[in-house]
Length: 212
Image (tube, rainbow, N blue to C red; front, side, top):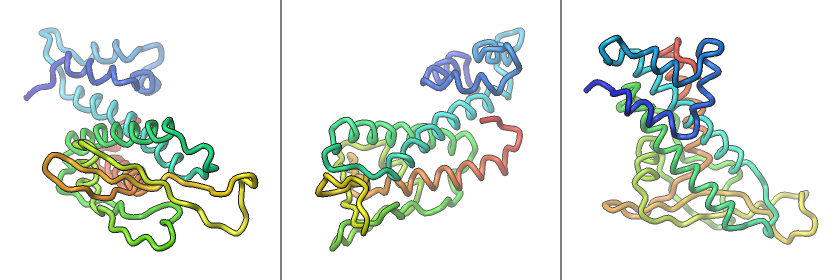
């Protein structure tokens, strides 16, 4: 089914349109770039698929980088707030949406990517947890989540950063439940690093002219 201009414009209103402007000719806005893809009879050229893919790539990479930074940061326990939880869950959900669209538009449905069952700082002592390992599975669960549980990990290291805090924490993983699937553990660091390393690499290999 051809992509309509309305669909493309809607996708570009996801908060990342400004980022793609840097990759189109000088003094050309994203709106002008989209219009340039439309033929005299209002049909959208094949390059509109590329433009749409680039939009989702930029959005997904932005969320993945934020998620990587969040899961790589050490927090004093006093900072373990609702705001951090909401920011992290929002980025994870939005990453899942945009990453799924990238995989769909690039035809990567059957491609294997780096496993997502790794954590940045490990787990709490005594925890024996099995994580979802497949990126496709993890993204689908995040996208279709109906409930979740947010998990911090207590960081145990010889030299503390926050001397006044009894505990130092890191963002660890989510337990995700969907309508049809039971709760499963998803490493947020694992999802972010898999997208940044293997999905982006696959896009660059298969579509070297894409700009993002």
